[in-house]
Image (cartoon, rainbow, N blue to C red; front, side, top):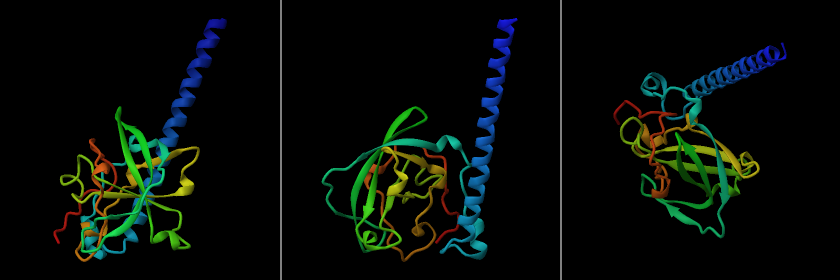
Length: 201
């Protein structure tokens, strides 16, 4: 009787845990759908009928990963190349280490010199990257992720590649979009976030 009771309790815990995980996943996917709709609807560059050419990978909670943050020491400012004639000044704020499908990878996190003087964006962190989808399924010039310093808690940062977005240069000309440094080229396929824009420009 006791053994049967223990088995029943164990089964109940498994069911409850599975349901909680399912509910969390469903809630996350619904939240991402709303986030994606807001992103498309409010886009500053892609307007009206051109929004039909914006496409995304399927929302995958597996590309929402916790990374370990290591702060950079004595990082110097440098000129990050852009797609235009201008450069932009950044410094490495730190390094993120995490796993994608059992592969350990690293990404540098950058801080903008010009934004540090802004009231609204003083704590802004920038993560430009390329991966094995770049130039095929996703934009060849790489994609971006944005965070705040306050998002780093106990030297951990929750990275969500489902929010990876294209620079403005993916849609049109005339912008100076930062080009991801070579050290931020991930040797894995990030099949999450925004895909390549399908309208030629």
